Structures are given as C-alpha cells and as structure tokens.
Image (tube, rainbow, N blue to C red):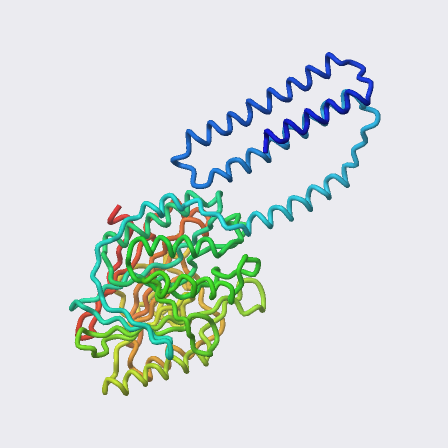
Length: 471
C-alpha cells in the first residue's frame, strides 16, 4: 500500500508539473524529495519495529493500522502548514463546523472501534498448559438439556470463580492479563474437577473498559479454559450483556452454544433450556461411580436490570423457582430420598442482606464461617449487600423442599463472607476483578476463589482460596 501511494503521488506530481506553471520548481522538488524520504523512513521504521517486537505482538495488522492513522494525521498537519504558507488568505476555518464534524466522527469511529473483536491476550492464552485433573464421565441429554457428571473419585472438587470482568480492549489488556493469570493460579493450585463462574465474565461497559464487545472476551475465556482441560459452567451476570454491547442476549446465547460441549469438550452449556425467565437456567447432575444421585448443581440466571431506572437490579422470577422446584422433586422421586443440591447465581438474594444484618447484631440465628462483607472499606455495613429491591421466593422454596444446602453468588466485589441462615449456607465468592471497580486493581484481600469439596455421601465443605495465599 505505501509503495502504491508513492507511485500514485509521483505520477500526479508529474501531471501537475506539465499542466501548471510552477512558481518555484526548486522548492517543489525539495518538497517532493522530503515527502518521499519521510514516508520511506517512517514505514521502514514501522516495519522494522514490528519485526523486532513480533514475539510480543499478537496482531501486527493492528500496529500498521495505528501507524497509518498517525501517518495520515502527520501528513494532514503538514499539508495545512504548507497551504497556510502558500495561500493563507484563501484558507478560512469554520471552527464550530470543524468541532461538530470532529465530534461526530470521533463518536461514530469510536463506537465502531469499541465494538470490534480484539484478542490482545491471545499470546498468553496460547501458552496456557493443561492442568492435571481427574477424568470423569460427562454426558449430555439432548431431550432434557441436563449434563450428568459421573464421578470417578470419592471427593469431587468445584472451584467457584466470580466477576472476572474481561474488558477485551487495548486499554484493559494489562488488567485482562492479570485476571486470566489469577484464574489460572487458582485452578493450578486447586486442581478442581469442575469450575463454576457466577457471572460478569466480560465487561462491555465502554466508559470503564473502552470496549463494547462481549463476544471476544467470551471466546478468550472459553479458549483459556479449553487449554486448561477443566470442565466448566457459568451463570450470566448483569454486565455480560449491557445495553450497548456488540451482542445481545440471543446472539451471546448462540456464541456460547457454538463453544459448548460438542465443540470444546469442556464447556457445559445447555443446547436446550427450560422455557422460563432468563438464560442458562440449567441443572448439572453429579452422580457417584455407581450411578446414584449425589448432588444437583443449579445454575440460575438472576437476570440483569428491570429497566425501571439506572442499576435497578432484577431478581430470580417465580417461573424460574417453579422450574427449580420441579427438578428437585424429580430428583427426589428418582432417588427415593431428598437429594442435596446447590444454587449458583450472580446477584445475591435479599436473604443475604437479612443474614448480614442479623450477624452485625450478634444474633444466634446466623452462623459465621469465614470472610467479611466490607463494602467500601468501611467495615461490614448493611447497605453494601447489593441485592434486588424485589423479593424472590427461591429461599423460602428451598427451605420448604429441604434439598438445597448452599447458595453461591458474586456481584459485590468486596463481599466474601459465608453465613448460614436457617440451615442454608449463603456464600459470597471472592472476586477476580481488576477492572470494574475504581482502584480495585491495587486491592488484594478480596481477590480469590472458593473450593467446594463434595463427598460421596453428599456432605460437603467449602474453603476460601485467597490469591495472596498462593502467589
């Protein structure tokens, strides 16, 4: 392309010389030589720099694209300077018009750039090795949309990650890299049998991440997990499909299906989902080696926003709870007894707030296991539990059925307490986030994961794995 432009410009100059009387041929010749020399040195320098840094540059085309933009701006500035020298009185600048045109151009081009797929972390993802782990039989039922994991070991380990917040832009590159490395550190330290992410895997919020793309981060994390070899599942968070994101709910659902088990061999995303509110409401059945039901793992969409205002959080709706209750009863009918189960979702239930209040008051209705809900660094405060203003009947239904013994959520990046309330363990996940919360990149004590160990008799334990304890 630079060679083509050089030849084209040279031909144009020859034509101009034949048809226009040049007032100063010597000055014109000097101008042509200077432009040619600058262009040659500039592009040879860009090429040489790209070759030298090829080991750390994933996409050289992006370097040339940026170099082209800078080159164009430099030539434009030079042309304006030259034109001002030659025809100063004929040049009239309409400042308001230029400002309006520039603002519109920046907005349109910026919006398009922020929606582009970019894969700046791919070099690191390509280097991620397989993590040693147990091999279990995984089957998918096309009729029910249920995955079944038959454990080959006495204990089955689940690593709970949440709020990874991959931005996917050049601006968020360093933080995205830290997030993926933190996830790998947790996985490599614990060697889990399954990883469950409770929402906000991506962060297509242009103001914070300078990206509106939510498909590339999904592809990046899916590639990252595929390289580790660990099976994984997830629930949606409120940020995964923001209003201006490049992919809407249905489009992102199609992306996940294209990356799911039949393609990747380790993403347990259902191709068929129940006809209820939300996306990716699914059940994964964990069975013992003899085929008996051990634990039901429910992924439930806590949805995003109600649409009634800014950050008015949604909740788990009644039809979702009815689907959950139906599956609990079906498992009970098959096993002949109540089957233990867990629920994973993103936005905490109102009972998390109730339990926090009771804990702060010293009530014996709540048992504290570990962690804290510090909110904005001011100690445990009730208003830092960001639950929906709308109540969900999930907790009361779980109490009535007697199956679910543990709820796991994310959403509140600094909260990581585990409290038992009315016999149900309410656990916050330690967040991974380096990007979404202002200043959180420099914080450390809230970052990490939880390791849930399910035993053959359906009893279970959970422990925090702070990132600071392993790196």
